[in-house]
Image (spheres, rainbow, N blue to C red):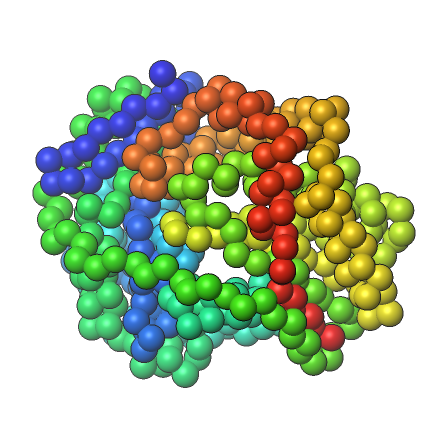
Length: 404
């Protein structure tokens, strides 16, 4: 058995994997992100992530930050559109200290206004840094357009004008509504037994109590395909071509993930890398990605190029998409793509921290996690026809955003 799952009496779920290593990783994965903000709260989920490190009932901010670092460990957090994750890495013997600290900041943070005011300047700098990178910013702008009018259609970082208004009370109201134990998973990996992991979780999370979640997320309305050109006065053209895709629980998610990897995955032999970069020398950055959410998804193709080459890049991408939609890939090409995809997933899971974070998200979403063999078997069972079908459904009537 690759992993062990449990549930504490208060409703907190946990997942653990025992491996022989001197290092332990753990995380509290919370099913709350920027899509759970009200319209007057944009950026508050990300602000809350920062606020967790500003002090608890028993620790000041510097004590939170130094607790594990003084031991050579790490404490960090990140926010997505659907999740907030607090995670830590320590030596095996300090695992209990990491669990206690995560519990302390997740359930006993005081969110002192003086500390939060200083942290706002840090987040403003983060926003400015992001705006200085058109390669990053275009993704957010595209998502804002593709999910316009929905809770998914706004930037995770928020705006400076809104950030200034947030205080400790705003964070407490947000966490009280969204950070509920029924929407949390504690994930761990290390050289200790599952029973020991469960006992440690019970020791530090067992007395935590919250109401259950009393709201449901709204599925975004259909999107009308669009084409938009934005003048950013950039040295290069930046472009995203994409559209809506399958949600995280849909069966077609896996064949689409494989097709996207074939089209523009991280390997040098992806279709778009070969055509745009290797054969024609038109683009240094070309990639395709698929992001599934709880009830929808997003597939995107990004490239940057010299302004004079952008139209040719778009024409070549359009040609490759039409080929995937209308012509079956050869059995040999599909077999090679499957082997490559499986190897990429296996190599990614060699990172214990990555496995631990993925396990927490999977258990939160699906109530379990497939073993690597189960995932491999599902990939190997895919047919060329399935790949063509998802390409036809996903790569038709795409939208386009261009920075120039």
